[in-house]
Image 1 (cartoon, helix red, strand yellow):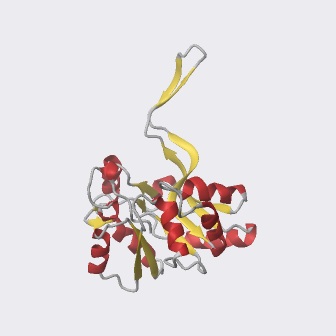
Image 2 (tube, one colour; image 1 turned 135 degrees about the vertical axis):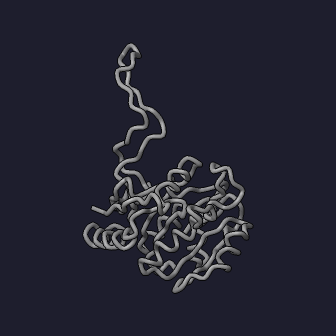
Image 3 (cartoon, helix red, strand yellow; image 1 turned 90 degrees about the horizontal axis):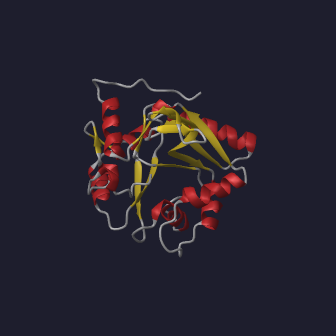
Length: 248
């Protein structure tokens, strides 16, 4: 779990993973989702110098969970460097399959982890892939969308339409063979942050080694802005439960 986000777009000074939704932190919700699916080993990649997540985890009691924390070696590493350094230094066992998730993505279908694992294993055997990404069937545009003719006269307009493209939801599964892509594409000596979505995933896709696991759009809520946090709050409160979706 990548828990180094600072939550600047939410206008907060605490780590985004510790933001509360209906009285429960995003980190708690993420860990509980996977604990309930039978997962036991967790590695939290934390921000350089941050002690608040460590303190929070040490004060919690998650039954059946083995939780280790691996901090960024320096500030501004971003997700690509953080994950790759953890692999190189043994924070993540390079002999084992892993699931990478961001706790600021809310999944309303509690069966998703095991369904995703099953479909991933099918793809590994059927198509020789080494990684899978869970994707939603489209996403809602944050803007209105217009079309215009050759004279710039608007011919149609739709406010915040659903864009019919597959959208990654911050949930990835990697076979041990996938780790070479991280080690080859991400240099620990590179200056500045390195996002694995920009350098690692394109390399996997080029080799046709990545598989897409589809989920309904309404089973996922990203929490990156105050508006998205409010939307998530409305959906997860007991007075307004959202029916969980299901993988196709």
